[in-house]
Image (cartoon, rainbow, N blue to C red; front, top):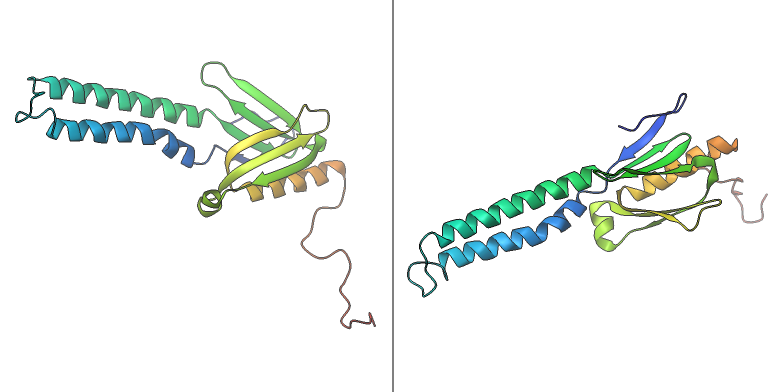
Length: 181
């Protein structure tokens, strides 16, 4: 968990959506399937490429490579953290070298969300945060529930600026009659 400043309250903390892990695991899974098919066909005793113990060595090497790949993907996924507090947005990344990006919540000017069809189905998307004085938007990719994150950013931003908290009710009442009477 991120260290909080004195008087700072945690609002949200998350990692990228699990789909990033799935995307990174597709190549090793395909490699395992190809090796399994080769073990039972091309490298079998009834085929011309049969060399004793080649199947065992090849299979063990590929399994070891895939396990290392999975460990690296898991560590990389866990090393990225998005934290929203009542004072700032903190983006942390890196395993050996750590990088932290801090955006004061009262400097946020715009927060845009983007979701693909798959992202809408699985509940992830991209959040772009524009802050005053920044050189472009900060992008939080594959963020779970991006709409919720965006709404919380605006709520906390309004609280910090001293404005009224955003509400779901309309700003002015809608007249009962079209004439306004």
